[in-house]
Length: 571
Image 1 (tube, helix red, strand yellow):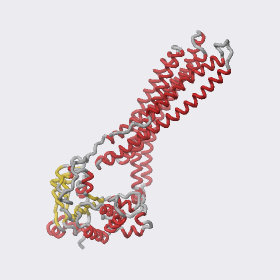
Image 2: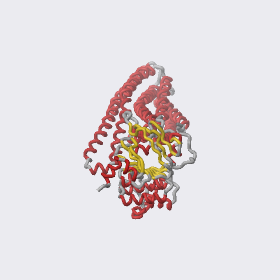
Image 3: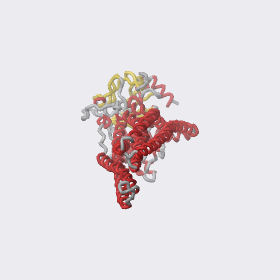
Image 4: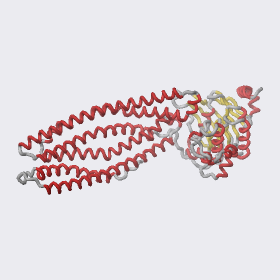
């Protein structure tokens, strides 16, 4: 997957190089002021005020120039990281949209949210540090050493003694903290999962008076996150004082070495002052590694998590067939068996053979958990059959491109997914190019017009997040209108009328039969009243096709169907 190269990288490097050139020159000017402007070493001990003024003016100019370069460096670095994060976030979201249900469940919703938001933010910070922090640290470190050694080689002894201590300190603390960053992101996953579940299921939580329990569950997840964060912060809080101590001892050592060399006539007091500034720059550069490695360690841990998403190849892959077929609306199951991933091979469907003909209204009936929803999930390839073939219009569904296959099918799922936008826009998901007249026609067929017109805004009435401002039946009718609007060859209702009363349901099926006679309609239901008028009804029992026929035929030939009928309708 291609990610854009961050914009303005060369501008950052140029700005930083100019900025650090000013920093390197600054201590030498300060040394010149001390040696000549104050002490007058080359003028018989008489200071030169004009030299102090001229050099001071140059130093002010360098400060202003360095300030400008620092601002530009920050602007370009943030521009790079934001563009990079923008590309990665879009790439990650595209991949999430391509994942199968199985893969989405494996990651979990909270984890995917964390990876696309917080983890990519950590990667952005890493990019900023790599472009700006590493460059700045390296220039301060290398340039400071070169400049200090140019004053006198004896100053290099201090650097040689201090550097191993600092490197060992950094390696020790980073080594201890690095494994904690992956744990930290996992704790954040758990926190997001709890938060997402409680926001989505707030009505259930309140209905069962489980607020106290959920507060404890959230508190436990939050405490785990805070505990891990504190462990990381405590590690680095020990590191900073130790490195400060090494820095201060090094400054004292430079002054001591400088005093000896001044006494020997090898360097001047200004050189010593410049050396103190350079050693401070060198050791401060190394100390910045503290912050940089924190960012890098966390960024690398987050990068691995985002890479898991980007490298996750979709389990459901495109075929190559997207042409118009001679047969339209036919569905066939040939010796189909299916087991959910991670279910230990336990079959939900077993050697099922079934043909649904174009334009037919086909009902699927059976007990809870018998495999009804799983059966219809194989048609649009939400999952692939473990064994056998599923064919649409005489073509194996695995041979279609996903867009061509799913373009032939409209699905209204068991759980009505409603988005936080207007009612009209929710219905228009079935066909974004649909006119208001077409939307209203679909709403009429779904028996939704009455409640929509009763709303103050009509089709323009905004829906609360998750559809909480609508009743269960209203949400189902909006979802049905969305599916009907698509005007697909095959229309699947997966127990989508469970919240409708029998009168409204009867009107719905009557409208579908009248307005969409040529569409193949597959009705999954728990109630015989919902499917008894279908052309044919399949009875599923423990993943097998127990019987198939019209209502009258099943009443005569299927004991399972008669038992269901007697339990629901017989008085």
